[in-house]
Length: 288
Image 1 (cartoon, rainbow, N blue to C red):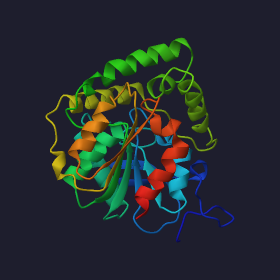
Image 2 (image 1 turned 135 degrees about the vertical axis):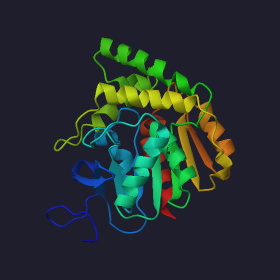
Image 3 (image 1 turned 90 degrees about the vertical axis):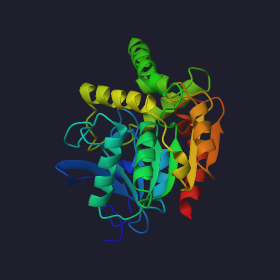
């Protein structure tokens, strides 16, 4: 089978139609989805804090899956994956390695967002030959300034969202202004495009464990990012309240030859607000 096909034989390039599969490795059953042509180096997506398979923006996934084998997965203890959520980012990177190797890949590209970008950095530093290219969106380095404040910001925005019966991501990912509010609503709506076989939400306990892992990462000694020589695309909005935008600039300075895109008048979810501009850039970056 050369690709993931619909019953009528066409290649699945819509994330809403990608079947959920499982693979067991190291005593953990990982839930994952794949789409696009099954050839070449796959692009593995590393998701954000509290996120499941259903949290990827189809306007980012689908353009990449037109010509690339795309894989998304649930971290251990999240969504439909079994086991307990690890209490460190490094352990999450070890799980990602286990999952990728279980699928039989010797090399992958990594597309990561937020907490996923922290996991991606640890994975690349530990297994440099496994990764060819890396996209680091809305993220920052180990020991990054104010990274450990993610916890307070997250809880505060969850309360703000609850008061207005909104999705916390509307507050966490987007500016609360005339540009941000409609972009937030549109993003949340896009996440509902898949109507069947949806993932189960993360448990409160798992979410709290992830938050602690991010806090620990933020308070740890910095990694030596000069060792990261892979082609790297860094992207963020100019007003990221979760992982301060200045940390994207910090990554760019420390990762030799990296590209940096900062989108105006946008926050943590800048790549989602500007998906029409970002997706072609990501496709081009991952293409060669």
